[in-house]
Length: 611
Image 1 (tube, rainbow, N blue to C red):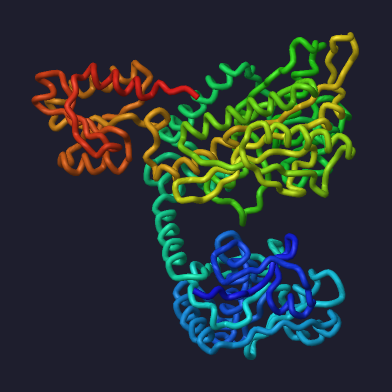
Image 2 (cartoon, one colour):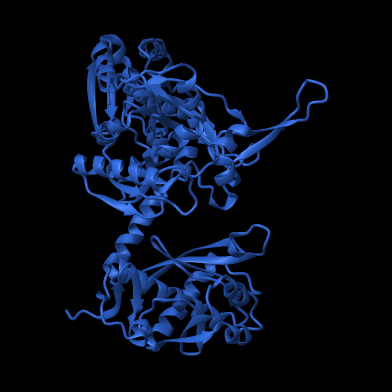
């Protein structure tokens, strides 16, 4: 099959044939009409414009803002007089197909920005786009009688656009600013071939079934109630048990790796956040409050609710003189933090304003950095293996907005890089993606549907120990500054539980699941034996439930199975007489008969898991 050339990759830039030809570039890696990342970017960018042209033909008063490519597709923000909802997507898709069949040449041309301002004088959204474009020249893409400001890249002809799907309609504030008008946003996706599109859409449907927001509601795990507090979860009994099981597992794993538990306050004086650099570099993501003093004539003082746990841990290190013999010192805290996220980005438990981190800080000598980072990487590997996650790592370097001198950043980055190389694992580089106080390694896990999620992180920090004057006495009796390694393995319990919920489709591994078994007595005379079994399990620290009502047995079994617990236990005459249990195993989809003690011991052993 002949490959169709659609663009070139030059360095880190993707350019289409129009740009390549117009700039007469002589070097570049060819990009073909296929599902490579570069190919998809060109296909999806072009499909966004195809959609915009279809909307313009159907709704002539439409004005368009921006239409970028995103991770799994594209979107376009626009406004029309007529309201557009999900019901209109089919109509827009049909017009897109019709335009594609016209085989319109896609042309790129450039204009001085001053001329573009005049050209689009009656288009308010184009004027907003022009304000955000740097430089004095802008590029425009034209296909048929439709054109729009765009930097590209695009396909050379609409005939190549065949395999696309519009997915949903949403609202979006102009430029992401909630003080400005609300625009309509349509999301879509596109691929180079039909099979890839079908495979992706099937995965999207499966993701809807696994959506943690739906499953959290159906399984009665948590509530997300904006009336109480947007972006903050309310944990119901089953969800709280699930979370507690995960916490206990990780808590024990930390103790066995010589981490020491600590606990810091939720509120810290703003002076501390100014000293750390958070006030200058992170203030927009924090919550602050004024606290009245009970002393006369003393003005109120500003406090910040912690977005991170590190400042308390710095104080714990410095509250007494430390020796080099104590290092490394490892403090961990399952600390609740608050970060102000815009309402538009809140997403179930995946993006919240209040969450609890499995946070730890390692204070060590510079010569210990690599070994300690390697130990953390091994810890990460063991956790990911337990939950059957594949994962990848990325080294994020100094961002534009940062503190500390170049030498400190170079030392920290080199230490992380060497540890990654010693681990033998492949890793990517995210230039400029580090924290404001230091470079980091990000851990990205892949779930059962192939989706990637950012979870854990490892950060080397020379800056905060310097700002807070941390010292230890070295082997020559000198006062020396330690290095601080920030690290989280799962990131936050909220986010990780959301990912686990979707990864396992609500069928959690027995060692962390909220309910190990549901006991169903067939009739009232079987109830005492069922209660006896439930009490025995609870005495062993195993949460189980008793389901007895006037509903039919089959209905109660269906109700229990919808809870996706590992075992549904039926109690009838035979079970009472022989002190046995009839067990339906959800994981193996089989039914077994056990002696009651044998069943209890089996469940206990399945829950005795260590990292």
